[in-house]
Image 1 (cartoon, rainbow, N blue to C red):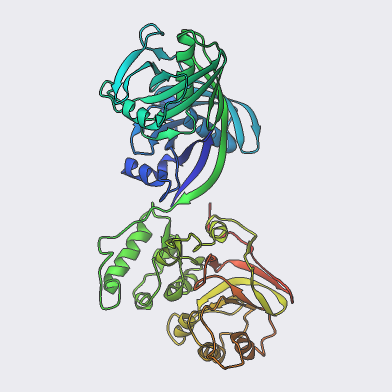
Image 2 (cartoon, rainbow, N blue to C red; image 1 turned 180 degrees about the vertical axis):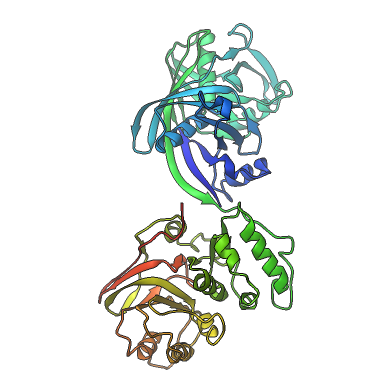
Length: 538
């Protein structure tokens, strides 16, 4: 997983990612995570690195900008301001110096309101073509387009226009691809409203149309002032918001505007082993291949989580060959359900580590309607949060009461299959979670009775049942599954709730940390299930 912070400056959005997570293919990764349909979505990634030893006195952070198309840019004014907002939100000083590809940029916090930070930023001394007032023409399919080249640490071509052209985005793309601009160019279409106000549209190299641009706002203001059409300070208005630019000929440009912390999250970077498509009868390759793949994932420090693609059958073949010390030596998030239950309970029982009964890649994350995962529990369980509520919406209380203990359990049929093996489940003192799919009520009865006769229901503090999808009785029968369950549990005077959506569910699969301390409070009308301790370390 790659943690990120998403921030926006006047609609120009960026992902801020620590350099320690930078993969070898920085361009490819940045393209993938910036994709607005299949990734997180952004105009670019600001990769941030600590200053080197000889720079540490003067520099707070180094920022390296990769555009949404994977190309590298010298600087983004808005992106740099987003970096400053992230640093201040984490306790940095009000005045920051950030190393960019265009040199040092100093940011000063002017105000803050919640997650919105207002900065004024030194943008350097601009370079305006030919004594600050010349323009030149480029040939396009619409004829010659006159504009003014300006550098604000990266190249710009400022086109003044009484009205924005039709399909100005296509024109901006055509201008930006002209051979005269050897490194490409950012294109601004500028309407001068009066001496202190500009309306601007931006077409940026590597990102295309953007809601705003910091360096583009500076370039537009500099070009307008240099050509005698406007005065400092200038309000630069764009679809994403307004920024204020101050500049006097020969001096630095100053840019003032907001930056908003939008959200924090983690991007799952999938890893595929060479033998991922291997097959051995109905297994995904031989036991040896699967064990080797599992060990390789455990031993790699850059892999933070192992999410199973799906269940099915076969994880029990691995148990007698696994050296469980490897999990203890390389603790990671291990998540799945169904057949994976046997692996999760064995890891927890043999190492004391918390495992995760929750969504899988092919069955839940890949759902086209986007409702396969309950992201609230996912975030809380994997994010080191304590004292959080598991959703009990739609649950029924079958027996009221209160209980405290570690969460444990999973798919009922897999729990039963562990009996009288070296990997027999250890349920005593737990809040026992039980779920299954497509099992008739008499089959649920049989499996629960087997657990009861094996003594595995003795000492359980509470029972939490899943959605039990498709576990229905034949037509014409008057009993239901809840009656069957309570018949088996008749002698156990502990709370029982039914309907927590984890595992085989109809949607929004809840992540349950197996082994984490939890508290259940159930009364006749509602229930509360809270995980009391963090399941992961910071």
